[in-house]
Length: 173
Figure (cartoon, rainbow, N blue to C red):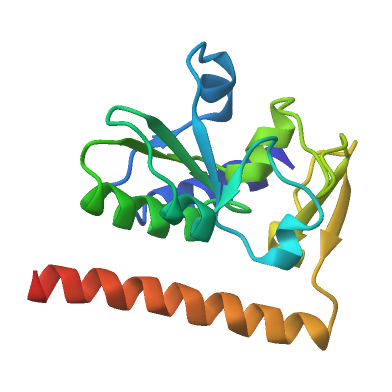
């Protein structure tokens, strides 16, 4: 299991060389507060989140003081790397990082998760079979066939939108 997790993390992080990827153990050791941004869908967040995490829309509507540390995460790190890259370009005054291995690594390192009511939980949305590397003490939740296809399409559309914004910014300034 751990070699599979490592391979998924390496494959993801290497696609985003301009993003600062940090390990869950590092974030857990920090003594200063951080702002977590959950880049997953509503359906995924309804299963569990890192305590205090904000969704992307809530984060973008908020104001953080310069120098604040922002830790982006999703399931394994692809969507959060996209968001972290965009945020880093837009908000150079923030310390923006991607949680390497995202919520899967967070759980594996002993990081707490809560359900949508703020209660501790051992349920973890792993998106699909390819990313079903949840620690053994967690119940892995996946999108179901049929209904999950819609959610998968929505997530892929959002990824495409983020990439288009990045391309526009790159070429149009």
